[in-house]
Length: 471
Image (cartoon, rainbow, N blue to C red; front, side):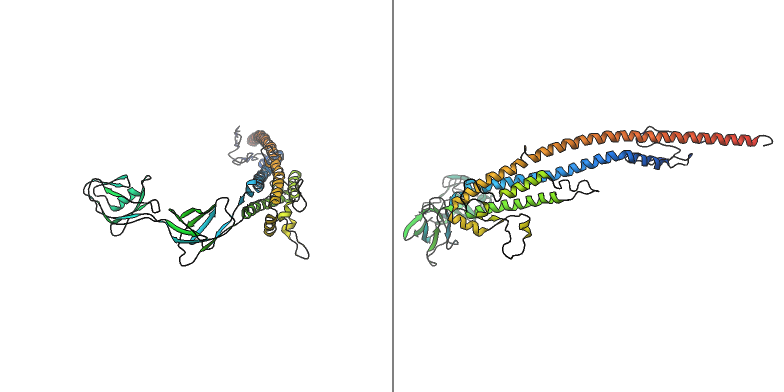
């Protein structure tokens, strides 16, 4: 008679050497050798019924997790958008600057500092500033040789190469000269300062003879004139030729003729302003596109992570508020200088018989550079007022949604708490289902054992009766 053993394991129960699959996977447990029943199928189908509530909770948890992932992404994008909007309204963006140009920047470049006189200047350069130089022959000494260069002390070690000596001079942060080794084995010392007052003085203190003088060259000042007024400078960076302008002299004009340096009137930097607005526009278009994608993504009956924000009312409110603010006039601002549209920021909507702009229909913004430039030229103060008023209002909208205390953050906190609670419920229910399956496996195993025993006894009785005399 066959016997059966019953295990209390949560994953498998052995019966007649075969196994039946347990909840969540594991080895198969197949019984029914005595009854002829497919107990594996019976338990599997019964457990599938019990598993359905768990599956529903798992789908709910997956949907919340996917939704939080999308909300976190939108929250991050809104924070970036808020920073870009704040930068557009920054008053320092409108600090006045003066443009300075040179007709030949290969010889003279010009940059403004502040308070430069507006107009054009004729600049002539007859001589560039350079430094004093001295050339010395070099012989590697047989013993240490102490050298003084403009008062700085150096030691040429016995057997030291010319390049090693040059490197030691150039690495001296307190030194007053630079050194260069030539192919002929000489050393050229150059004053680190340019101008006629620069000098190179070399003294062989210990008399080792490592350096022998060959030639020298005096330094010279730069010579120039501005509108016929002569000037000089010990440096090729000249700050005293045109008030508020720094000239960098890189070539003489003795053959090319004077160079024209133009200084513009003080005005906000239109390029910086345009760049700031374009940065905002790019991020704004990305944000509304991503929000719209989430709002229109249809839920899926087979994928709980799809369409989790479909028609979401809070996101729709954020989208509507941002779009509305783009065309809301600033408080107290005059007509024609009150909205972002007045400075060239709009959806670029189609006019006349032009083709329909899908980008405009989606609400994407564009910047009309010509409109902005003209407005900055005619009314820079008005542009500043528009951007300042609009920026403050728009930042409030973005921050109310994306800040740590905003609507999205509150949703994320609530959803994360719910996700955690669902996880606890799922874990508890899974444990209960495991116990339920083990109970069913044991019940069927005991049934099979009892049937098997009865069948064995019946067979024994049958054989005994058959062996009786006269049977």
